[in-house]
Amino acid sequence: MRYERSSSLFINAQNSIPGGVNSPVRAFKSVGGHPIFMRSAKGAYLIDADGNTYVDYINSWGPQILGHAHAPVIEAIKKTAEKGTSFGTPTELETQIAELVCSMVPYVDQIRMVNSGTEACMSAIRLARGYTGKEKIIKFAGCYHGHSDSFLIQAGSGAVTFGTPSSPGVTQGTAKDTLLARYNDLASTSSMLEANEGEVAAIIVEPVAGNMGCIPPQPGFLKGLRTLATKHNVLLVFDEVMTGFRLSEGGASTLYGITPDLVCFGKVIGGGLPVGAFAGPREIMSHLAPSGPVYQAGTLSGNPLAMSAGLAMLSELHEKPKIYDQLAVLGRVLAQDISTALNERSVVHQINQVGSMLSVHLCEGPVKDFDSAKAGDNERFKALFHHMLSQGIYLPPSAYESWFLCACLDDSTHNRTVEAFRSFR
Ligand code: KE4
Image 1 (cartoon, rainbow, N blue to C red):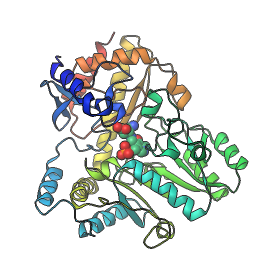
Image 2 (tube, protein in one colour):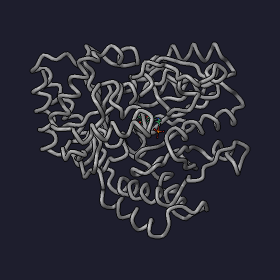
Image 3 (cartoon, rainbow, N blue to C red):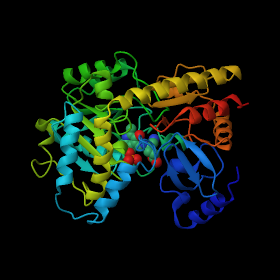
Image 4 (cartoon, rainbow, N blue to C red):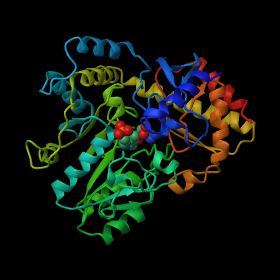
């Protein structure tokens, strides 16, 4: 593979963009080398600025579940754009996608659109605090809920890669209201709730963690959180920015049969355009301005262009629910065959997989929380990442990220990927 064009584009980008990227994890800091600039994408493939083709296992960090440049989504965007991109007024499209989400996610009566997963989680926590009148929140070490101040306390995504568990600029005043529990450890959550009785507004959790690699909830963990939240009169917030509309129509909540009090969405809901959302029962959502006192707003929230992309994406997923079984089989078989290939090379590894999310950890395992995720051999991961890149396989450039599979993967992409693992030394 030759990367001259990407290399020169990166050098140039750093003059006018901090670090040359608009989101830190894209900079390849944790795997070394320089980022690859992409020129286009179609289906399961990316094409970079030098003309190299890759099988894509990031899919824009989740949104492209039906593959890149999916025709119905592109058509919807084109048709809407010809009528204008944003009016700053209500449009029927917003009601159409809101009603569709309510039909896909059983416990949701109302949804508020925003422009990113960060905005969705930030707003959901404000709503939880406003609704309960309490100030503290509990999050889990290694889980990432976007970059708003309350969450940059041992965030599990880019920030961990940079070894800064809490970012400069986050004040102590903010940090004191965020309590950290251990993922898959109900005892740590219970003790935190007891030590802060009456002060905790919400527990926010990734029901399947995707920012420590992919970490499934241990049996009973989500049910235990539901029980604890109810017992201590605390709202349970599922951050389904990654898992929403990816693991099933109703996300992880439907997959595991656990109902949160509020849910956050992003990625898939926007069909590749900037959309986040938070949703829940009318009893809580009605506290949001203008129907209630909790303020939240956004110039481009629900803009017609993004809504048309999201509506096209969600409509197809709603009409073809078998796609989730297909994606789960793709994930399971790929995980099995990668493990077989790594065993042939005597590479110590652990593979976690839930539906179309998976991650390869270079450690003994099991990987079930942030500490066990950090036990992975990062140096070896760097070598694996660049080996796969040289074989035309584009993996997330961090050991703390999940893969996201799309419906366009096939035997050819599967075999190319497994062969690349088989040749890893
Ligand atoms: P955004 O603000 O990036 O749309 O969403 C924040 C967010 C919230 N919740 C979860 C569970 C998330 O995974 C994310 C964002 N995910 C990262 C990948 N780890 C996005 C990639 C990036 O930061 O560039």
